Image 1 (tube, helix red, strand yellow):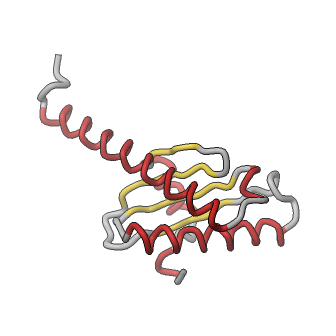
Image 2: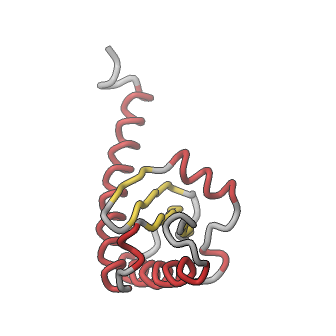
Length: 131
């Protein structure tokens, strides 16, 4: 995954955290927000508390990047920022298992994001949300 497709700086992660929709699963927590670009950007977080040794954290990140490649190839680019946070089960999970979980959580997050945007547009139009 080339550098233009990654979230690398703190403010990029912060924006995804503040504006994004979070969904949780047994292996991962995924936050998704629209980025206004034609491509997806991915960020991966594996905490020191989860894996104290750097090589273990890096191994999990490599597996997550590979899973993200598979999901992007299957679903296509959608112009979103995605932050993937590993949970304890991700340490022992294989790439295929992580890819299935990531695809499931992304679909769920996109449904929630679309519902939230629809609700926001209704209230800003003064339509159904007005009392």
